[in-house]
Length: 194
Image (cartoon, rainbow, N blue to C red; front, side):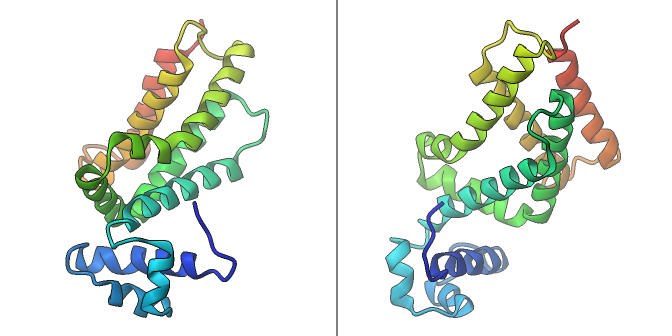
């Protein structure tokens, strides 16, 4: 994520995250964003080429929030299954808190950006989980005959998709804890070393 020494990038990004879900991307003007941010309109263009250029920055910001939240709640040599529970909890927390922005990111990235852009935004998260999985394999906590790269992606995608189904699509057949428990149990059945 880019930043600026004077904090203007962060102010613009936060203002966009606040304003765009209220009005929608099309109806939100750059004037609305800079007014909320308390910066000049020209300052916007120092950091973003257009309003649509905010979308990948917002998505990157949400992933940064998620990953920092996860890292803040785990110890360095924690058991894989404890880390997985934190990943599930934090993903659900961020999805619940930012569901309007997540919908915006999906629509904006699907329309205007390639899968390569999406993958580059996710790369730090994928790499982090790949390291966690590698350590779990070395410590005999999970099965070893897996493709670590694709397993990391599938775990993240499954957890995010499940959180979005619960909070955005409102597929709430069970309580939140039951829903999260099912995801955890599914992954444990898939990866547990017997």
